[in-house]
Length: 391
Image (tube, rainbow, N blue to C red; front, side):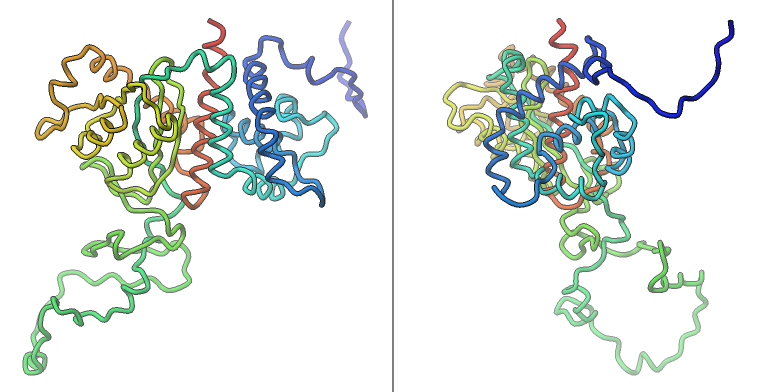
């Protein structure tokens, strides 16, 4: 007998959301670890909120919603709120009932930005790593470090001269060429222009054409009007410079979990400085001999000496010339092992830029991007848990 294609006017369901998610679904294990980490941060959340006033969105739900946005590559907060209207899996993970109203996107964003600071993101990452199921998987002796560029939410056209540079009149400096004598200016010269000069863009036009050829632009004289903290930088000689920030991670070598994350302004010394800061922050005052693997960008005499003073063996890749790493370090078998393991640090970077939102951030400022980057690294660790804990 053929069934009828009729749509009922109303829907009544007595099935709990918990029963709609399969028992062996990977998010179940992730949610259990996240809930335990959030419970351990309960006292920290109490210090952030006042005792009276109108209740805000629960910080636990804000963090779960931010994680689900990263794990499922949801493009924006508005799209996340839209999907939570009909996606039962999202509601179950965040902790919303099937009849609970979904937040307004702007309200969610403002509450999330007040909560999700760099300090809270780092404590959340530490709480996940301290979980009873994850802590045995970590190495406390062998680590690797590296950095990556995070494209800023600013166009190259926004990289304009600083106000003090615009105020300087051309030809007024002591090193400028002498002015042309009046007699030479009076003599007419007939020159035929090769090409017509490009007309300057009209003020107020949207996305106007700009020609940067022949102009010297550097971070000392120019700054982005969209994101003043972004810097024009490139890591490799053959690449073009972009407005960006620099993300740094410290990884343990046993299973490749990210244990520390940080975002700084992009410059040539940021990677080595951030590496030292993350090592000291992860193992403050440690007397145990540690090893730190890194690529050739970290092969600098001052950095190597700082690591040795901090009781850290520098397993840094050697430069072809003038290397600070000698046979004292490379003769040991552990050096070759660290060089193999350190390449795994590229996997969290790739995950953060393909699944996560770090290929080009939509936020501005070092602090906000740092919180987003740290939370993305925490999500990357969580995404690997179902496979590792199933073994």
